[in-house]
Length: 454
Image (cartoon, rainbow, N blue to C red):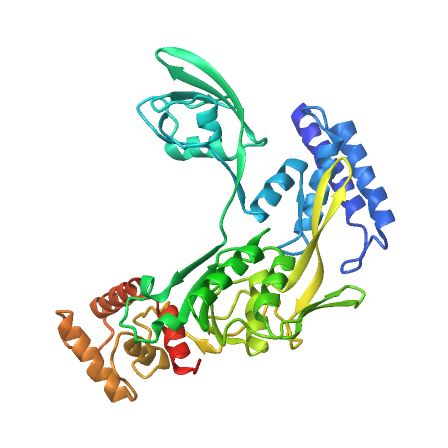
């Protein structure tokens, strides 16, 4: 009987609280301004403090959780960071990692050091090959996997190690600071190191530059790549931005200033409508033509570069439409709490085109992600494209049928001229092998550049 009365009382209290929270009319905003909302949240926190049964309530954590929830409710890019999380975020943006200074392998019990890097903190502090690592910053390593030990060594809150080392049946303690190592973001190469197809005698006028991320110092790295290409006498460049998820807008603008002809690069607009433009003063381009390689993972600051090159006619885009992140975040410091990364501006291309949620479309689309299914028809443009991709000449449905019969025969299948299970599986295996064997986006860009005069 006691339990029944308790349950009824609990339900009544829940209903009372629910009515208090949701008394406003459906579809109407209850809080007219932040002050009203602040008072309401203070009331909720007071209720939690008075009634929560468990560990002591930490009001700082409650406020941080509320701010984090507010940020995450806005868009995919706004976010709250504690101070520790923000330090890790900045380290990632700046493309810095803390080098361990040694390599290791896992054994039956503890991980063992297999190599010491010259002039590293590990060498300076006396670590030796053969040392067994028993504790990393207070965490025991016994029976840990390679991945778990790697996490212990890389996910550090401070740039230091406290290591317990087993050497000659004795535990030795080592404490040393780590060195931040800048990760390269720009790579360059001659075309004969990359291409898997026969090249013409004109290949040496084309260079390849890849930007993997846009962080602190990327524009300086890119300048070095430009100088390398110019010394080699290269007049055309393939600029690979595939998989580049962006980074620092200022660095992207500096890159554009080195290759985009005189004029506007991009502009931003905030909530008030205020516009801020960035310009290139470049009088003479370092290259006659640039082929920019993109895919669906080319995003944010990388899209600024792709759109500026395309719309300034300094080059053309090959591949797939980019991701479509055309918004900029700024960091606000919240005293005694952390940092708030908030979307505060939208940016537009040189010619005023919207990038956000639309992306930068390619001038030459190359889709290398073909797959087929039993639902596809031989009359579809997709199937024609698939057979062209596999090297068959197809223009009509009759050509497709002949190509399918030929494919089935070569694959050791019965020439049914139908997309049955065995044929679909064989086609998809052939498509996958073709995609692994050759970089069609790179090859297309190369052939297009060869057509253009230097």
